[in-house]
Amino acid sequence: MKEKTVFELSVAGRKGVTLSDCDVPSKPLEDLLGEENLRDSLPMPELSEMDTVRHFTALSRNNYSIDNGFYPLGSCTMKYNPKMNEAIAKMPGFAGLHPLQFEETIQGALELIEHLERILTEIAGMYACSVQPAAGAHGELLGLMMIHAYHKSRGDDQREWVLIPDSAHGTNPASAARCGFKVKSVPTNSEGLTDVQALKRMLNDTVAAFMLTNPNTTGLFEKDICTICDVVHQSGGLVYCDGANMNALLGIARPGDMGFDVMHFNLHKTFSTPHGGGGPGCGAVAVTKKLEPFLPTPRIERARDQYRLNYDRPQSIGRIHSFYGAFLVAVRAYAYIRNLGADGLRQVAEMAVLNANYIRSKMKDAYEIPHDRFCMHEVVLSASHQKKTCGVRALDISKRLMDYGYHPPTNYFPLIIPEALMIEPTETENKETLDAFCDAMLSIAKEADENPDILISAPHNTDIGRLNETVALKQLNVNWLTHHKEKKDA
Ligand SMILES: *Cc1c(COP(=O)(O)O)cnc(C)c1O
Image (cartoon, rainbow, N blue to C red):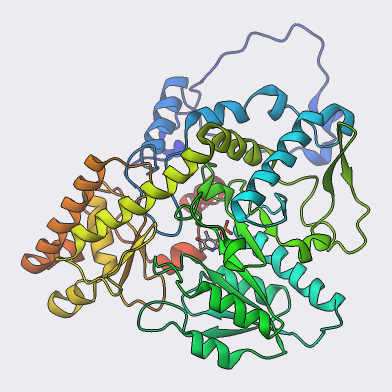
């Protein structure tokens, strides 16, 4: 790392602030905290205030974020989130609420959540919604728990399988397994869509549900979706929609109308909560009428102009989150939706799809596009041609993009497309940005032909070059104390 650690910058005796002497009588620390809670030494760096500010400002510049530049990470919807929503979520009336306050004192918050749930229900084309789950995967778990409860309530106990396409996001099979189901993979056909014949052959009275992402992860709309839902229903199963990325559908098409029984949204993707780094999110779940009794408690209900929390729901799967989920994420989503309105949401979808197709048409001559048709909010390229002809892989192209100042696209996902580069531009980028990004991609394709080494040795401008990504993931060490200790021991 180029940056020194605060310990390397430390000079014994240097101070950040000088406090005046204490002018009230003070007790010895032993008396206040107890002897057993005191330690002899705590390694602390000693720096001036200015050195400290410069240090942390320099570190922050090593980060790449949507506020720095284009971030086309497919399936993640790294769109620009209006700062106004942050300002609204920070208002003391929202941010200062305590989760243990009495219902009478949080009527506005309950009204906001209830209204948001009604709006999301409408967008989903379903019957009811809960914003309690904290993430997309958490929403999947909730949806599957309700599916399980539904079959059980009908005495349909033998339904132990969940079918999932081989193109699905990894959370789908993980959530199904976590919920106690067994998982079988449904193949994708040569068009990049669910193989409906194969699905039909796999359906029987042991199948609880089929989980599908639509548009699927190859960026394509499952055009046979109505048939798919019909055949699953005919066999007594339910259909789950992974709606983590609703950017392509908003205001245009509704999963409920397609025949889905339950879906989750990612408010932290589609509805403007910044994400990445594991901050609070919301995987709101919408359901059709037959699953409504199983929604988690508490439910917000309105009676005689008062909102109240109802815990008395005998068929409910119970609690899925403490209190009522990540409230300030709901506030951001509500602000975003109310500000855009119905027409604005539809425009989001139109622009997201237009932008992805613009990139697709510009990439055609330089990169292989395995399913080169009109795509939805994202487009999946393949670096197979580059791998064959110049020994350059998708990873090398991504690393080289960093030299051009861009965050790389999603690599090697979906798993069914070799050397995949999954690009999601989102609706928030303008034509100039898309053109500059496409120019970079085209010039990298040229470099791959003429000078592949420059790709294979990339990135060249970052503080850290290529990592052993497995070790970095498994032995992530971002703790200053262990870092300090390792330096001392070395
Ligand atoms: C992001 C994503 C998820 C998981 O959402 P988390 O909030 O990260 O749990 C599930 N499915 C798809 C298609 C996604 O893009």
